[in-house]
Image 1 (cartoon, rainbow, N blue to C red):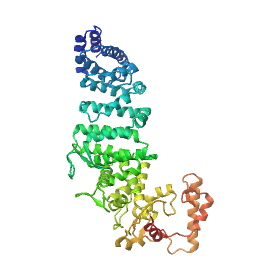
Image 2: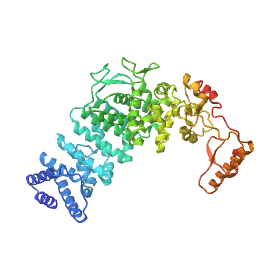
Image 3: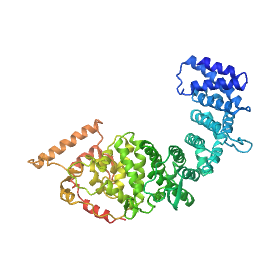
Image 4: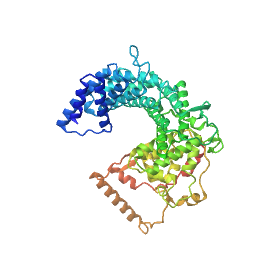
Amino acid sequence: MTMDVSAVIEQMETGEQDAALAALQRYNQEKSQCFSFPSEEQQDRETGELKQRLGKLVLGFLERDLQPSCKLACLETIRILSRDKNSLAPFSSRHAIQTLARHAAISLGQGSSTPEMPDVEVIVEALKCLCNLVFNSSEAQEAAAQLQLMFGVAERLKQCREPQWNHDVRFFDLRLTFLLTALRVDVRTQLAHELRGAALLADALDATLGLCWLDTYEVARAGEEGQSEVSPLGRMETERAMEILKILFNITFDTSRRKVDEEEAAIYRHLGAILRHSLMSTAEGEDRTEEFHSHTVNLLGNLPLPCLDVLLMPKVQQGSIEYMGVNMDAVSMLLEFMEKRLDRGNKLKETLLPSLSLLTESARIHRETRKFLRTKVLPPLRDVKNKPEVGSSLRNKLVRLMTHIDTDVKTCAAEFLFVLCKESVSRFIKYTGYGNAAGLLAARGLMRGGWEPGHYSEDEDSDTEEYREAKPHINPVTGRVEDEQPNPMEGMTEEQKEYEAMKLVNMFDKLSRDHVIQPMKLGADGKMTKLEPHDLHCLSQQPFINPHQNEEEEEREGEHSD
């Protein structure tokens, strides 16, 4: 390997284009598939020094007036060398980034020049070099930010409908933008605010998908208006669309947590309509479709909550899923996507939570969405013999998640079901069991029951005849009818019962003093607080509280809340 690099350097130092071209082409061909660089210290240092020397020579050649084939060979060599983190030094300087940007036809403001007759192959190769360098080198990232590279790339992104740029130029423009916005907060802010990135990229996504607008917030694929099924999105269009979705995610990640003005809301609604179309579209192949939908769902979760109403705006058409006069196609697709991720069970925090959180917030803010989801997830209870977490229904699967080892996963699953229950404690316990519900109720200070303040519409009574008959016999902790158990205190006198109670209190007291356990009690605010030793005796004197007490009253309150 050392000899190979030395031989190339020797030919480059002659300064002759033909000799340099032949040497670079041989080197590029041999190393084209080299992506790993095993570290052997002595050899690594020697090779790294030679590669850096070769890099300087190649950059020097790019300053000259070269024939296109030699220029392309130099850029290919830089692309290969930039994969190795030990060879980045010559390419990470401000001057090197400026040179590569010029060959990528990226304008860097006043005084910079781009080719009048751009060579698309050269542009693509230079863009690949920039992508590698930005990904691998913090110095290159800093140089790109100082040169305001994003402004030049954005100028070409605006030309998304012009035919002069092929797929590769567009794709690597987008990939470079994604890397810069992912790795540099300042560039992310620059694109989002100074360059109006949301509107710019929404237009690029519109052009990539080939859309036409049927109404203010309703779109279709051009030439396929009115068709119930649209043809799959092509491979190249899917690749570009996913890059756009990833960039938009980077620049909007904090949008849902802040207030937006009317102008911003209009842009996000416009974008939301495009995302709804993306959600209802397919790509070539099931895996690629799921990847495309995943990026779409991630971005939908960043949109301001009031702007999610665009998911429900399209008119109900033949073949649409309609509920309460509203088109529920998008909500149904989100639910189907979420359940598919749930069934897969891999990396739930990364794969499931975006769609589950999106459904939760949509249900919280849109009455029709909540009611539709409740019919699918929490239909009227009939099975009261099995625990809520046992079974194959979507409710069973979500209740199982409420005791998941990952706190974020179990909290998100509980939150979703709680919202579908209109944040009614009694209804939540009814569908999940008190044992499963306790974590969320404790966190919210609702262990004593009650109602979480919220704006929810009236629902009809969902109790089935089976549930009403079994209700008095349901164990509220497990959420099912339990087999009758013998009463361990049957036949005891009051003195014996008191003796056993105090014996239990003393056992808890000893475990507590030895710091084996930490007994807790329910405070007046509904939250758990530390139970002191002297409290244990008081608890033994408290009367038994019927777990079904006030449930009917709370349900009636829930049915008439707005």
